[in-house]
Length: 142
Image (cartoon, rainbow, N blue to C red):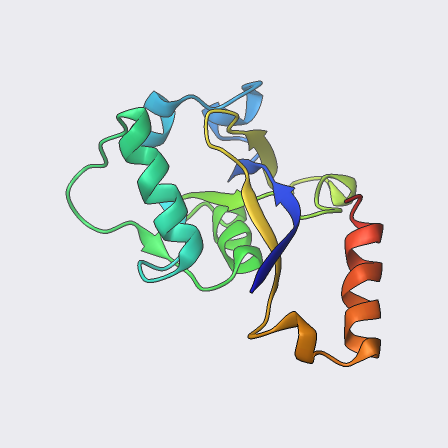
């Protein structure tokens, strides 16, 4: 059973000196041409992206994109200039802006990624586990 808690908008993390850093938004054409760092091919978030790329008519060049298992590593690789990281914007990322750090440019044409809890059966969770899940959901604004 899945329970979404929050929807995370997609952003493109780029170096401050990248031409895309000054943009207010990233459009589908920008994604088609970018050297992307994205989630691994077999991940749920990658399937989410691939499905919406197809729907938006985004055709990626032949050859694999770089894939990393966690979003913080993808942002760090973009910060090092190894590509553009297409990642969901995690809570608190905008507040940690620092000189020389990555710029997060919104990608509003991609639907947000719903994240939350997944368990076999909610009814089998302990009361403490359910209370914790409810507290997290309340804290995240749902």
